[in-house]
Image (cartoon, rainbow, N blue to C red; front, side, top):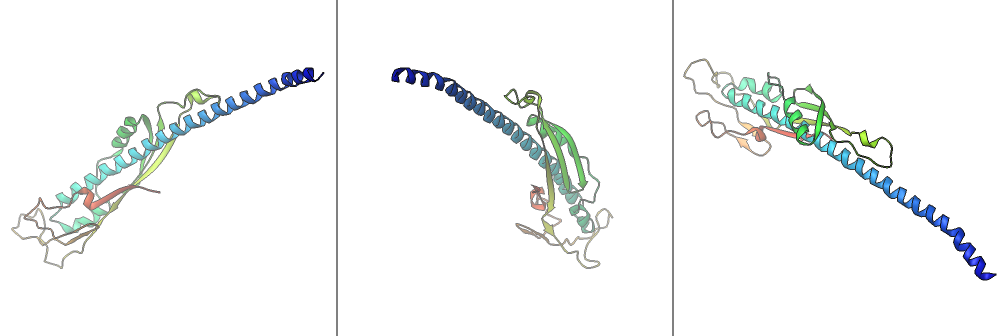
Length: 207
């Protein structure tokens, strides 16, 4: 009698064992699906960050170029540092960097001259999993990049500065440029010793 009961108990436990194993397998596949979605989402965020930074850096380089061009006219410097000068659009750089990171640029906007907001979507879907619909699901992400001026200056007194482009042989007295990492005593006769774009502006992602 005892042996028969043991065999009966074993027979009853086998379906429970199969159910538990099946449940564990389902959980394993579910965690795998979550992992796939996480990887896809991280890829989208990486692409968005790179796209926003690329657009902002392109604008930063243009601003730095405008400053060098107007070096002898300090009255224009503040407008340049504030982004208040005419520049070429930079969203094409955001599109390039999104593509390099396997994503498509969905939106690129500059709410002000020193800020870029972008949104991207991954080109590759999450892939098949136990979660229905993931085979066609693509992740989206957004990022904001900010251009921050790093330098300040004080305009010299009246009559101290020459004006660029007037044709007069006037020695320009340029303001001292106080930047985050260095102070620049600018010499118009030594145009090679000038701050670079990274000295004039910082480009970073907004929180």
